[in-house]
Image (cartoon, rainbow, N blue to C red; front, side, top):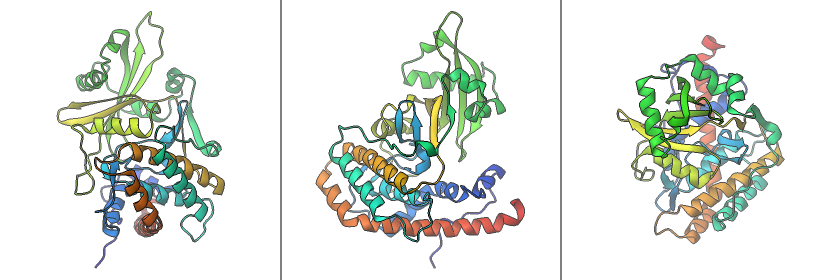
Length: 368
């Protein structure tokens, strides 16, 4: 008997997580976000992986991972990056964009959206030395709550990560935090920063899906005229390796940095990593100008984002083909199976939605 891989019980879910799942506007997408690894398992069941060329995958390219910063816009969040069949990134992204349509057509995605994505992908794949194309028509839909002129303004407004940091503060001389900070700075050859900066605030927090992190503010010492630096140093996901998807790097933080440099060069800043008491960490500087798309997209915006992300994924896939794989093999496989990829993405979306509806029904009397 077939069991829906996407069914989950709420027993171990926090109240905050359940609240997000039951949100009338974004709950279904939030559930979809949480099903990344299960979707990958289902993809292995639905499609033969043996002939798919492998690349360093983005791993989790969905719409809410598309970020707009002062430096540009790109698909980020590389917790689930690893070596695997190129098609996974395509299926995951197309599945995500279909859930963000304003209209409720019966079809998965329109032919023109699929054509735009394919055109963008092949452009990026065959011209990897060209920059990928940022989306231009979705700016009005972006959430610009985090868009300030300095780190000091961001911290003063006490929102998002600043608020989380202050909810569970730690002393500036906390030994664990200091060890993790030093290890992170050492990976970047930036231990010298501590001669000009000092920890003025720090706190512990949990990510959306439970990864632990330290949030640290480095403020300039007296007579040093520089801006404060707000750091996010978090534990990493460690998805289990299997025959088709695996991590080739000695440290998961390195894996994430390599993926960021490949997919979103110059978008994320001050990337580093460390290990403390057996736990691996990855770190970055939190931007004070940042926006994400959480609203649904009209037809023009779907086309815009499909082409943009297509160029980004295609470019990175072209630059990271597994040794021995040939570009023509990727294009041949893609052209042959593209419609199958979309059909599989649509099927998985239906299965995820069925599981989501079941999950909600078991909770609606308690939490609504």
